[in-house]
Image 1 (spheres, rainbow, N blue to C red):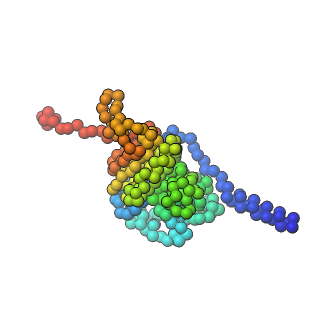
Image 2 (cartoon, rainbow, N blue to C red):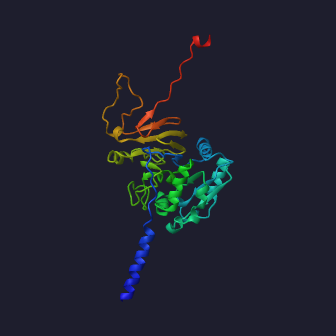
Image 3 (cartoon, one colour):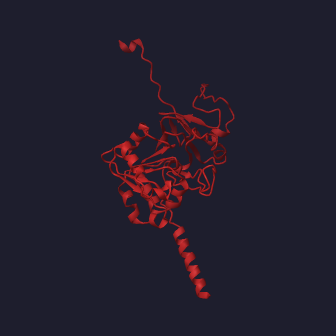
Length: 310
């Protein structure tokens, strides 16, 4: 009996060691939300053949002739372990030839040097859609997680669509194993490429635009970002820019709690970048300052006058 108890304690201890992975190395940076180096490309799902998004991914990864891409298929489930369809999609849409599939649901494998070998040479990573909690279960606080961060530190790009978008936030939105309709579920920690954030996707297509409002109202330190399908944000340091076919929604605590319908600047001019509701929309080409929480207004082109032609 005593021997059996000792064996049981040893087994429990070994399981605990496997479950408790060492934390990744979080470096202090000057940025509040975005990466200090490299670029995030966060896509709202159903990217399809949206050329502006694929072209930007190719450019950020070093161009089709030099890019080395790792496609992470874990969100799709175990059936995607050997399925090359997502790899072929990336190749077709980008023209990049050096594309490698990466898949596991085993923490021990994710903590092995052999598994992360493709990431050590990668200039870009692409997370496919599915269920974001599967990515967290497989990679959170592992050598693979650190290798993803190292891609950014080398100036590379991390992209992801749908579940591959939400996992990039620090708070894992819709991360419950029972289904995506549970907003705050049994998995709440993302990979944290975009710090102090919660990211939603398929926003307008699935009528989700109000889902983040109450959460961000109660979490003033977080920025909420909702992306519609075939639409993405490029994040470099603390600057966000929208590309794609639809809109991105920004959820900021101050915007949500502000009660005034109109916002007057010190020089008594109306600020049309401020929202009268709990969130606001950004379209293609618009930029947002994540640090200062404000829209970056585009420079207006001066009208050509007759004097300019003389």
